[in-house]
Image 1 (cartoon, helix red, strand yellow):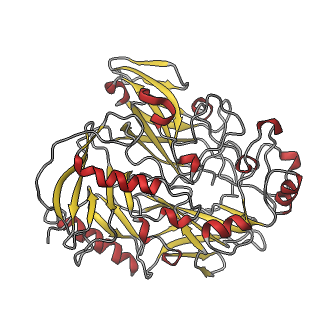
Image 2: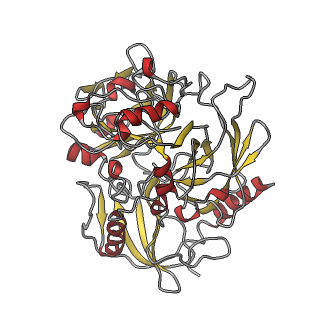
Image 3: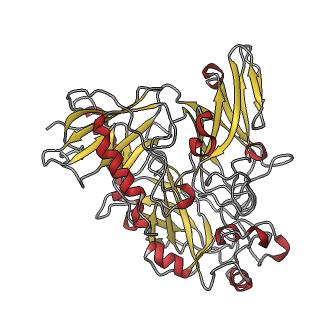
Length: 507
């Protein structure tokens, strides 16, 4: 069974983690960070080639999906102990490759209607971009960005617990089984829109996955399982134990048109704020500068990263705004007597008796900073949202849960492909369903960080028989002062430089 490949790989890497680590000298520290204001990371001179490599990658303006498959995983979160597929829900039907869907005029609205696509009602004076009006892509855009020919194709975001090594991503690594028994290979697989260097944990599949007829009804066609299979380039996790094969993993694919299958929070990870790994190639404008420090400056002290099953939207088209925390979320912190304190608004100081204060500044990992926000605002619509906090460390550590009520005074969220804000003018649909009430425990990683880094700046480096990179340790390149997390600089036997916080073999 292919599952045994994954389990065997995991066992081997766990067993060899200590013997696989190299050794070397240390380096004096000097702060050479090129990221937004952030006092938690200390850079040595060994980091300079890495920073130069990142700067070069950020300068890319070619709008193609493959530009995100560069060999960069930098300060990326992982959300579980054992690498897994957390979810691979059928995303939406028919939104990838809509004929004649260009611009924002009446012809574009007619094309959306003809393609069964919802279309937002926006004041024309706002001069909003097309992404503010619809969450679909034209046939021309799909061809240009993904390099495929597709008309009315569908998506499946495959949400992994750990980042995926970008050069290992290919459509051939994925296999989708339909309710009819048909087995389908995607037309494309890419990180888009999960493009930032610290968030390449989700791979979005584009293909023809069925229709919007609900399960149990005549003619229903939909995916039931997503599996990782052997392929010329084996899909690989980047984990604290090393590079681990994902081959053999599978997960059920739930239907987003069925009530109860709306968007979900999969994990909530609490860290001291760090801008390490934020940003991406410049052509991905909405996520180029949308970190906590980009939006809230030096006031950003802590980050609660909300990891989701798909991109959230207030209606399936419009963006989550940096000011929207109180519209969707409730945080709970427990005071010294065990009493829960609900945190419901931004800009309000909440006292956590016995520990100090907490204040929510807003939501980052949305879009760029603006002085005001409205329906013209376009965020990156990926699988991460960062609730940015300030306050006393002891109080922040008392945060225990995040809730998304999705009803009453709180708005639900939708996957892209939801009904929009102009229901009377919608085509027949149906559209992706709303979220339901949910509460998720907060993982406190204030001290551990729970990050991984692996960056090859001179091309693929030498690996041993177990797939571990081989290198001589040059010293520490980056240290996170809040957690002690370190990124080391290495040179492989052929002189190729790379950076890693994962195990490296020394022979």
